[in-house]
Length: 147
Image (cartoon, rainbow, N blue to C red; front, side):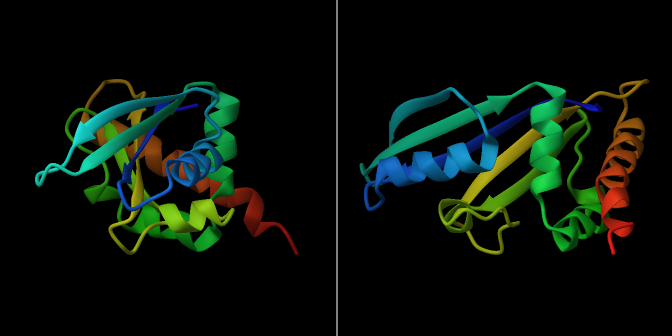
């Protein structure tokens, strides 16, 4: 596996049910432990930051395989903008879809942010891009053979 860990992070705003937000995060990430940090928004409104992490290859593979074919293609098509100089990979999931039991890339601002540390040698952006491209192509490969 070319990803060391995936960190899933989202916010429960005062207008949201914290339990539902946690349920969405648990569904999306598969993480057993969810950390919660109480914070305050710009206007003094309460915000709870929820975060889960997965580190096992099997868990990471399960997450990647849960993405829809078109979403994996989108990640491949936009890979250049999703990997930074520190070999971190970024994507955003639709929080409402996760609450409804679906994993989908976000096209709005109500998201579960996901960042992953890419393992590549040498540890350079170019190597990380290649490793991530290979991994996403492997995720797509078994789906191409399904009839």
